[in-house]
Length: 52
Image (cartoon, rainbow, N blue to C red; front, side, top):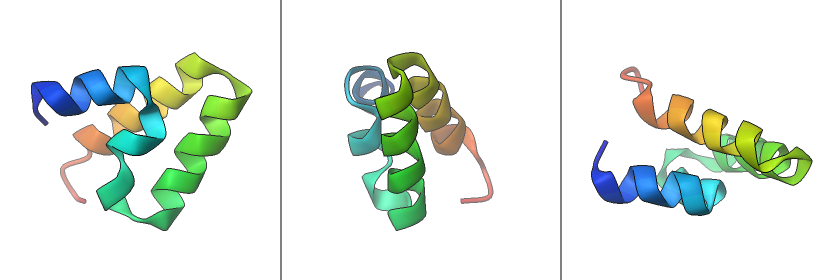
C-alpha cells in the first residue's frame, strides 16, 4: 500500500479501492455516504487485507 493509495483513501475512499472489485467499491461508497470516517476506515481495511 503506497502513499498515494493512503492519501486517496482519505480524500475519496471509493476511488482508492476501484481495482479491488465491484463489491468493495459499493460497500465503501455506501459507508462514505453514511459518514466520511466509516468510508475511510473501510477503504484502509480493504487496502491492508493481504488475501486480496
